[in-house]
Amino acid sequence: EADIYQTPRYLVIGTGKKITLECSQTMGHDKMYWYQQDPGMELHLIHYSYGVNSTEKGDLSSESTVSRIRTEHFPLTLESARPSHTSQYLCASSVERGAGPEKLFFGSGTQLSVL
Amino acid sequence: GESVGLHLPTLSVQEGDNSIINCAYSNSASDYFIWYKQESGKGPQFIIDIRSNMDKRQGQRVTVLLNKTVKHLSLQIAATQPGDSAVYFCAETDPGGSEKLVFGKGTKLTVNP
Image 1 (cartoon, rainbow over the protein chains, first blue to last red):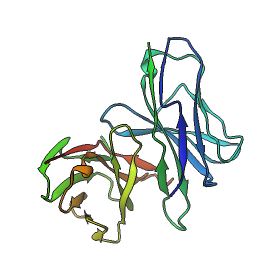
Image 2 (image 1 turned 135 degrees about the vertical axis):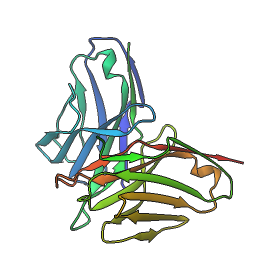
Image 3 (image 1 turned 60 degrees about the vertical axis):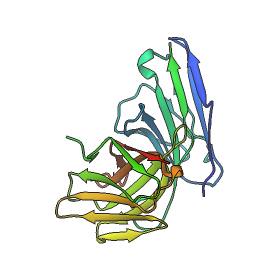
């Protein structure tokens, strides 16, 4: 099992603030992902990385940015938070299983509320 | 339209009964499917997966069935327990070939004692 940690667990901030959501994993996984999830709804991929210095945008347009300077760390940044950014943000990493898709391991998420 | 979706948003069962959670997908080229369980306040947790060259796969108390003819996926939970209460998501590989997962809307399972 992968250990993947997200901080903070909950964040309430005012409009216009810059925030960074932290995500770290200790299993040496190359691939990491950020998903956005509204309550009871499906997960939407907003960013992913296949390794150090690799970042790609996902399927859902997002005003956030990510960086991958170290294998274990994949922070997500919002330069100027808005109420429309209120959501749950889930970080995941994956392990290669040979041919075929990876198995994702998720963190517990950061619930962001922008007032 | 959506690539992956659920037939029912909620399902309520009695403890000890069997549960069946359904999922429909639209792309016949999808070749890999996963079920995830998400408990309140937690991230999704892998339950079981199945490849398109299989019709059935069993795990501990769970069985996934794949019907490629009607593009239907189901998760069966035997002897449902209160700890099974959660939202269940099916996911498929990105039909575009990137192997990224595409998630459907979840089904909330409530187990009554």
